[in-house]
Amino acid sequence: MVRDYYGILGIERGAGPDEIKRAYRRLARELHPDVNPDPEAQERFREVSTAYEVLTDPEKRRIVDLGGDPLSNGGAGGGADPFSAFGFGDIMDAFFGAAGGGRGRGPRSRVQPGADALIRMQLNLEECATGVQRELAVDTAVVCSDCGGSGCAPGCSPTVCDICGGSGEVQTVQRSFLGQVVTSRPCPTCRGFGEVIPDPCRQCAGDGRVRVRRSVGVRIPAGVADGMRVRLAGQGEVGAGGGPAGDLYVEVEEIPHDVFTRDGADLHCTVSLPMTAAALGTTLPLPTLDGVEELHVEPGTQTGTVRTLRGKGMPRLRSTGRVDGQGDLMVHIDVAVPTKLDKEQIELLRQLARLRGEEQPDLAVGSRNGHGLFSRLRDSFGGR
Ligand SMILES: [Zn+2]
Ligand SMILES: [Zn+2]
Image (cartoon, rainbow, N blue to C red):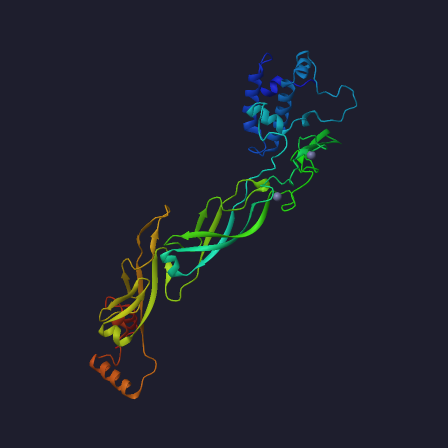
């Protein structure tokens, strides 16, 4: 059976190379296993890729045009599946052109960009409010001072790897039921660099970098919160071969405060007021992050009342790194009912209860509209 390679790509017999490539790209976009997991599409993708491979190979295409099939076993005792002979390289060629397509082959560079580093810094609430300037001890890789990053001992320089001939990779050919499979992997002798250092630097063992502990100054702006990161460009790890350093991130770890809890730029605290002060009203000193403020308590203040002190919260840090105003301080008031009363206090409270007609409290009195649930309940049971 002769396969219709032109038909598989949906093109005319006389199609030029560009037309073949266009047809293949169009079909690959639709059928590639990465975009189309359907098994039938994968089968078609194999066919399409094979047709592309055959029609872009002048010798194979000539056989097709003569009415033959360059991939038929032709009694050669095959067993090889003609539709297996495509690889990712062909796709890259079709999409990017043969020259320099994709990741490109060849040795990898000894010089690699460095990784970012992260350190954590504990700050209390006051420090988060004001911002801090600190020296931090950081352990990162830095350029080796002995070899300047080259990894070579004095007087030595890298030589071409004689195992891979400088290509950085070695090929292995395996025979399998799919036919010959050629795989390449990084050269184990030079680790893919294509070159070896005959006499590595003593201090860094050829890596071009060494780990040291050093001191880095960091400025944390006012208004930071738990989990926020300050980036110090180029203060991270130096890369292999003395490659450019990554960044250093300093992450804020906020220590919870004893009095204030934080909600963005707003602060919350709870104050406990004696029952008498809540009833009579009072003014009391309230320590805040900005110093002591006067808290005015209106007569008749209830538990759950929230007093807002505008601008007494945390600096509001915008994503631009600028501070834009201050949050508020929310004071939650909790009225404390006395638990230990002496004889005289009990007598006074009884007297007060008598004066207020509260010796036999009516539960409905407590509801908001005066005709609450409890009075309706009581009425329905035919009470008093
Ligand atoms: Zn060195
Ligand atoms: Zn090598």
